[in-house]
Length: 323
Image (cartoon, rainbow, N blue to C red; front, side, top):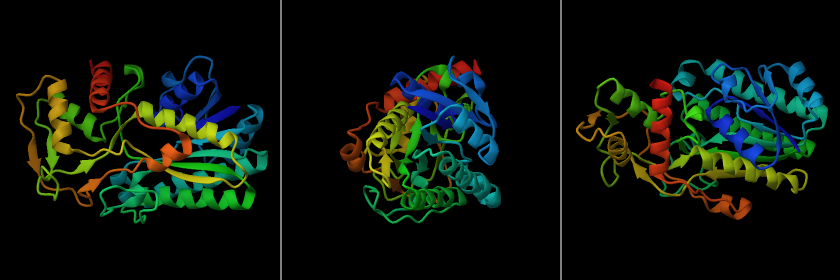
């Protein structure tokens, strides 16, 4: 099979490309390089530079490369920015997906693995978030991911597509330093950035109803995210027309922000620095931890990497990028 990976030059996308190619799949990367880097694309893997809003280029790429399935990762993903620029996020994430699905139906491509997010759940008041937990997204970003799931499910019913929407929880780590996250928008790189500047890491609130008062999250290694995409792609190969799966990708284990910060300080040798507690951020739920039962049952998949792997590999990547 030939898989088109949109956003395949980005942090998560590059790991998915690596997993697919190592799994024996043929891959074409489609990326506008707004946040991705051509350096992340492996030798021998074609790179088409373009936006998912370009219907003509999408159709031509699908035909020219004889694509039989799409892994759709390209998206805008900053929660705060989405609040400030909702129209931009809906255009890029929803209209972009609509354009891609139209190109797929026009060219007979019938399989899609969709990069969704735990942001679709909002602030769930449950110990473990299952795929049946009500979705009440709290940002335009989360809304676009949920609308994307609805759009894909509708296309599966109407056009016989085979689809899997994968709801990522908190992604960290790197397979190699070169593939590491270049941004500082998530907890681990945010702490690295503060430490590099000689400043104490920030903890946003320590008065939540959790064991140590800080938020609890389910952290998942990016290599596990990538292996889940490979498993989903293989599952769709034998799936009947109209299949539409929705699956959490998480470890099913909660770790508090304080635990994570302490482990980062230990890994980086900066245990002499005490974290600084500041005000809560609006909209941060106390606990969001995945149930990973359904993905285990549907795909035979489970996470293999723990917190230490995530933080050590992320630190190696940070040092590689920042000297």
